[in-house]
Length: 160
Image (cartoon, rainbow, N blue to C red; front, side, top):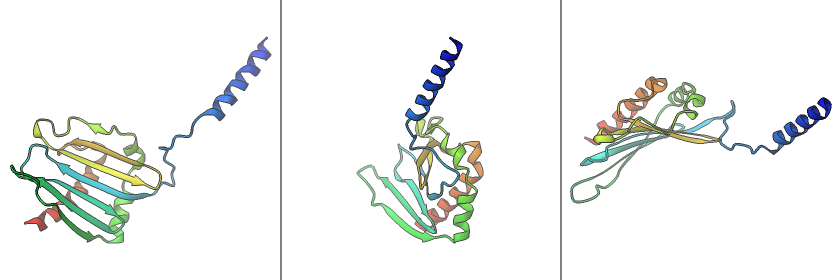
């Protein structure tokens, strides 16, 4: 009886192992970051209140969009470049495994018009985005978000 029970358990275990679906959102240690997105937004705001960065390799695209009381403002798009060293620093100092396991919404972004920030990382395998309260980034990425804020501020300086 015990032997039959053990064989049955082994057969069921083997069937379960081979019938599992492959999770398409699994990262491997070979995953490579291909783009970094970052931005801020304020829902109840007049002016250019939505600002985004998209960084792909050494190329950066800044986009500001917004509205007036009478309608939409024209988008402002500025492109620039960073050094390969700066790109590698951004990629190599980011812990994609911690990031991937974070909730997509943290806190209450843009509640009571407090604003929101977001970061999106795309690898050759997955894409993951988190949104959090403005100036209340996850502690694990505090230094990283500060670097992205500095880049965003450089472009905001070009708007004036």
